[in-house]
Length: 339
Image 1 (cartoon, rainbow, N blue to C red):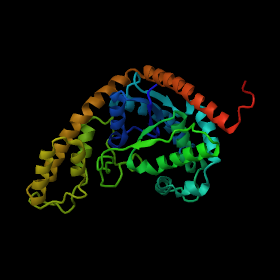
Image 2 (image 1 turned 90 degrees about the vertical axis):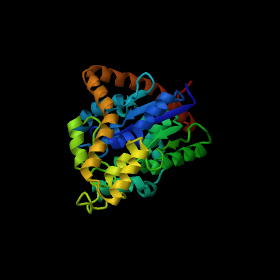
Image 3 (image 1 turned 30 degrees about the vertical axis):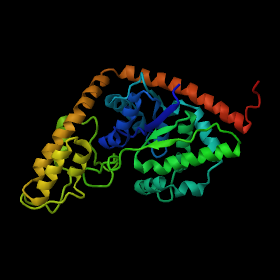
Image 4 (image 1 turned 120 degrees about the vertical axis):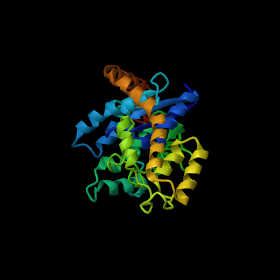
């Protein structure tokens, strides 16, 4: 086992998009291929049920789509353990123990939870499981003694809550069983993509995303509809770069920084139309997305093998999580009949 252990994952509530790719997936592949980490990649179906309990088909159908997206971006089951959260019973028992160390008011103060409650419009009808998912996430992380968590900037409060739970558990039970994880974040300005409509966040629920599985024609259509500068009505008009979604994407996806700088200069002085820069962005995106799309199509022809991969990964994850659970039970003093 490597000393550096990576854990991360996604909720299966639909196919993954380029926002997921920039925010976390690309880093996962980088860390996996570095050879320095033992990666665990989780499909968080139980967490997805916290706000989809009355629509379990959505979660079940999305599980295989997320698995396909993982394989398509380069997550390799020979290097990473890809598993399904609901298939690891130890995670639920760990969650129960950690819940006793966290107050409701602390959960309600979590900025990520507060933002998502508002976005989903729960008002006073917040499912207990949804409010509690920072604790569940702590169980996921600590079960594998993960040291490194590749996440987007919006997940920093969730990670900090896990670190608090680790410190509290180790202090209360006078042990050093749980490992305090650290986040692995994208370079500043490279970790989050705005939606196609200029919204601060690309989101499945907002319908403003480019999906990793979108074909070339769909990507082109979405790029051509992207929000730019509403004041840039005519080609000769000077345009604004700030808040212009096309240039935000170019800053992240185009490695030719000199070319992007030239386009920005021309756009700001006037004489460069939105259609031209959108066509250029589409070309840049195709270079990145075409190989991902092709790999995904190949795996779609081997669905049975993908399920077998998930089953094997879940069995391996169970072994590791059960070991941590046994240590936690020992620390609390619950292994009454252990010989």
